[in-house]
Image (cartoon, rainbow, N blue to C red; front, side, top):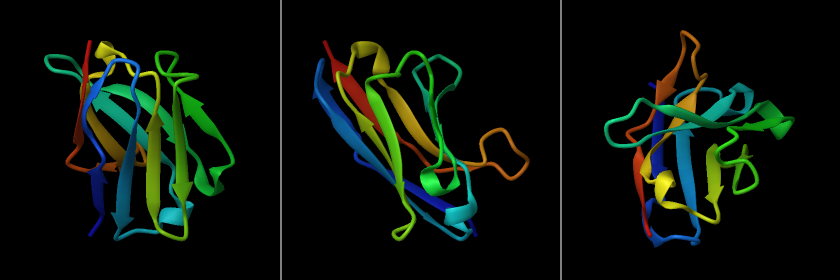
Length: 117
């Protein structure tokens, strides 16, 4: 069974930083393309970033480029998202996603990030 468990969310002031983690199990993490998506209250989900197997490539939404960094530790089956220079508009529930937009997509329960202005 695929399991994705996010952690690291919280309340932070504008300009602050957080580091999100996602512990993965139940599938071959090293061969999976992993992503982060977020959903703000009353809005549809927004893709944030994707990292390919082996960390060969990373991709970011324009809204977070230069502020967020995604990485992975294949030895620990863990995905990370470093969030810097946070803004109020970054407030959302952040989800770790395996195989985003593919038939094998799976996501965790999410972790709340709240940025106070």
